[in-house]
Image (cartoon, rainbow, N blue to C red; front, side):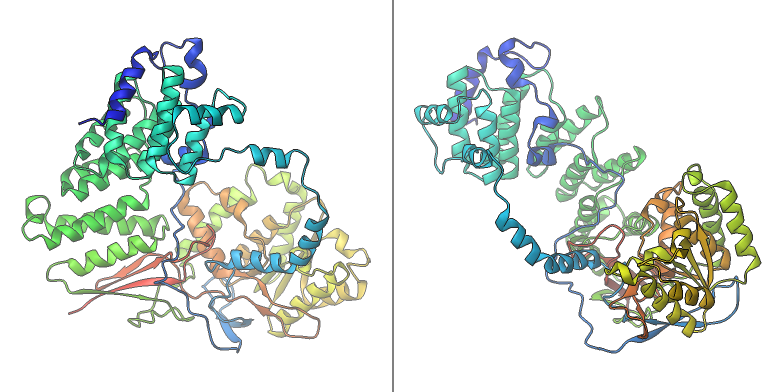
Length: 624
């Protein structure tokens, strides 16, 4: 039954002009709802996923999966194993411990940024002391709407509106402020009463913001009333309101109405992954696995990528069904369920998706709930040699197979080295000259991006010294080294001392490109041409070049090769001292399985960048 407040709203809305087909001057300003005009919080709750193809990567640390810090202070030697093409030798490189000092380890980018910010903190503080606040800033801050801490009468709201400039958008602005501050629902109701009494109408935008507040606060009974009002007042509902209604109805006993809203939405445009996820979660929560899987199949057929909450609902729902004896048999057999859910894990592997800790927990619970299969799950990590610390199994190698290597080499050569924009980075003559240079030389063990390595030095007068130190370390290890540089590095200057550059040319093969050329295509060509054993030294993460590859499979293969072949200088470098490199992992961080085990890398932190990989694993073992 509707509340007295809602009944009052219906009386006040009798004279309201329908949206969006009839737009009088009185409602054009207030009733047209444009997503770009809504606050970020509203757009987040009621619009499509802005990045439907991106993998779900981030989750908050819940305290259950913390990467243990290494207690050792020694530096280990990592081996480079020949992958097949090129020379059949094994070389060693001075590397740091595998955990957590890898450029691709989760959280490395954030830790580096924090370290740099600490170093510049004193300078920033001094700067802030002398920077005056921009003119007008204080005034704007003072004028910012401050929501009240209790429901107000119409007279009190009117007084507040006049004190803030009597803006026509006072109602929508204040409703947004109430949402942002997490204000009590009764305060928002008193605002709606004031607006309705003052104008005789409630705009679509204002109702949408009130709806957002209700949904986020879990006031589902109030949402039902708003639903009736909006259906009776407007000829149609746009995606924002529909998405909010799906979310709210889906978590109540009226969840089947969310299915109906979804079907109505499909007649206009393709619903978002979030819309499907809310309805699938509702179906699983209420034990309707047939509807849940039908909608999941529909989502996949439409080319949408499921969000992790969808998978979590499926694993969690089937785990709870197992606990209710006999329920599962009425819907799907255990073997059918296993086939569907294991297919999701395979999709994670193919698309290199890492489950968040909450999803990994649901996966663990489902495995352990399987009748008669005796699975046991544990949270763990891997040793530097790629061995699971829980079960002792060896994880898949980071090194590419011969088939993978040749496939990647072809793709990089055709799409990056010889791609459409390659001659924006160099000239045909220079590229051919470099190819001839490489063919005449023996295969290299390491290719060094000279300018990138030299720029690691903060002191511009020591750039050539920095490069010489790195090259000397590699030469000391008996490796065949190619240094790629630019022709300006050969001109003696404060940054490029002639003596240092002469020593570099004695210790390594060198190729210097025109100053307008980019080094990366040359670096990739030389590294891949030398064979699967060849590494490269650079801090460049190659994201632009990876983006040039035509499909996800090729980009994932490139990323795997990159993680197994890229060396990054670690710590302080000085001429005459040994140079260390961040460790290259020996294993691939990807969902993987055997006949009686599964290993899933999972996110246990909220500071992992997209090019970083998790450090924690879920180990699932089938006991016999």
